[in-house]
Amino acid sequence: MNVLFRCCQCNSEVTQIIHSYSKNKSDISKNLCKHFPQVELSWKTRYGFFTLGWKVEIFKVSAKCGHCTNRIYFSDQTFSSKNTEYEEPKDCCDNVIIYSAHEGFFACGDSGKKLQKRINQQIKEIKAAEEKLKKLKEKTKKLKKKEKLRRQKEEERKKKKERERRRLQERENKEMCEIINQQEEEEKQLNRRINTDTSWIEEQMSQMMTEADVTYSNSNNFDSQRIINANFKFQAGK
Image 1 (cartoon, rainbow, N blue to C red):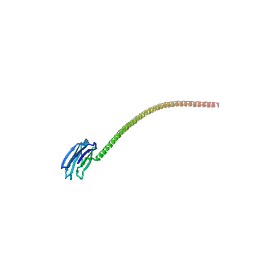
Image 2 (tube, one colour):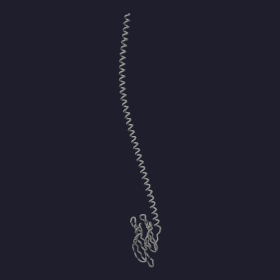
Image 3 (cartoon, rainbow, N blue to C red):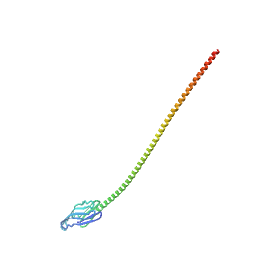
Image 4 (tube, rainbow, N blue to C red):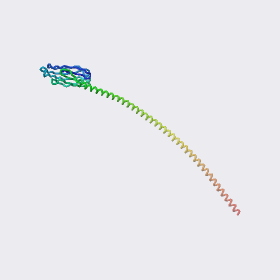
C-alpha cells in the first residue's frame, strides 16, 4: 500500500510504502510542513499465498496542527484485494490535510483541494466582511463624533441663547423697576403738588367767601339803613 499525506495549503507531501510480502507491524512519524509539522501512522500486514489473501491494517493515523498543536485523527482502515484505496481530508485552523492509501501507486484526489479552496474563499469573504465592518465602524465612529460635536454646538448655542435671554430679561426687569420707581416718584410729587394746590385753592376760596360775606353784610346794612332813612323822611313829611 502506498500511503500519502498532502497539505492542501502549501502542497507539501510525505509518503510511505507498506509491503505485505511478510507479516509485520510498525509505527512511524514524519514531518510534513509548518501547517502540519508531524504525521503518524501504525500498521500491521498479513501475507497470502502468491499475494492472494493479503491484508494491510493501517490505524492510529494522525496529524499535528502547527497552529493549535491539536492532533487530527483519521479513520482506521483495513485493506485487501477487495478494498484497495481510501482517501480522507481533514481540516484544522483553516488548513486541510489529506490522507490517502492506494494499492501499488501514490494518488490524491481533489476532495482536499476543493475543501481547502472553499475554506480559503470563506476566509477571504470573512476578511472582506471584517474589512467592510471595520470601515463601517470607522464611519459610524466619525458620524457619532460629528453628531456629538453637533449636539455640543447645539447645546452651547441653546445655553448662549438662554444666557442672552436671561440678560435681556434682567435688563428689562431692571428697566421696569426703574420705570416703576420713577412713576412712584412722579406720583408722589404729583400728589404733593395736588395737595399743595388744593390747600391753596381752599385757602383762596375761604378768603373769597369771607370777603363775599362781608360785602353781602355791608350791602344788607347799607340797604337797611337806606330803607330806614327813607321811611323816616316819609313819616316826617306826613
